[in-house]
Image 1 (tube, rainbow, N blue to C red):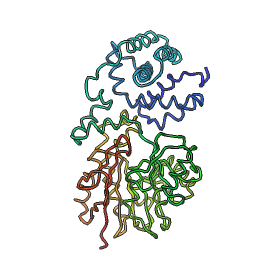
Image 2: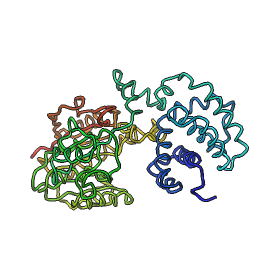
Image 3: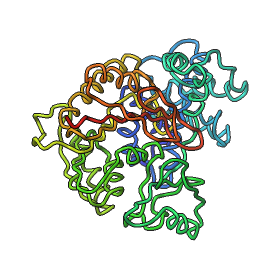
Image 4: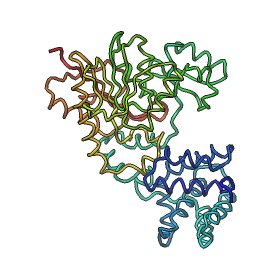
Length: 433
């Protein structure tokens, strides 16, 4: 059997098994897409993302229907049935096709001894309909620890956050201000028949009425716009950029914010972009090349300043730290399967360590913007509070912003089902003396 002959659902089950084993969709989905025909790739992506999004609800239902767990060597069949349940519960696919093709996929996976089980489980699921969720983890389709943490951290908003995480994220653009004004680009989109509107908070942001392929966007290949969520675009409004400044983008990959910085101020002296992942830096360069921008790229651990710093201090630093990514789950639903509660404390330690290191390379009179795509206070305003206790000279700047919630040490954006992702920002300045 050639790769292209392998049923779509079998490939999707293989992807989901890889996610359960710790790989992200961004790691395991691209090679899987090469295993199916070009016209089937959007469907494969939709199956994998959709099943991850509703994994905890689907898994709860499947486990309730199984008399005993499937053996570990046959675990891929468990995922095959999750894919089928996703289609039965959340897609327009005809149920008879889901049942028949799932049985065929089971054979293709070399598990013919389980075709009867797959057929029986799916037929009863189709006949009986979806059961009522038994707890909040299955109702909101999130891991139980995350539901409880959000309930504790955001007692008035936790359900809205969970629901927003399950919504399809809009497609948002950042207009390259060096090429077009936002109104000019909105006019180009209108001429192209693409419904779009200005974002509420990001000055160069445009939200599309529905997602499109980037090659449909006017002048995309020539650097007119980039795809970037509205919340992520706000970093440039906080950095207070001016001509002649030396700017550092720490933890820069994939480079969206690096490019946004360069677009916002054409007369910066230098932008240095650091990332410790050699595999991700080429993506930063690709984005810079498409937009005809230049930055100095360094492969390094930003916290290890002796490894990379040339001794010349920075006027501005953007520190977008590694985090739980709990604010961007709607774009990366595999986070629900990959993230563990035990990850948060080590992440907080990394975040504080990066903040301490960056403070050393910030020029007196300079400004540092701390950012995460997290909604957990432990990674956000509590990190800033801990840092200020250590660095009594650090001055917390309250931005003049109409967005987010003032946390006393930074501003928190919660994911909005019709606009931005969840994000946190804090602005710190180092005194002149």
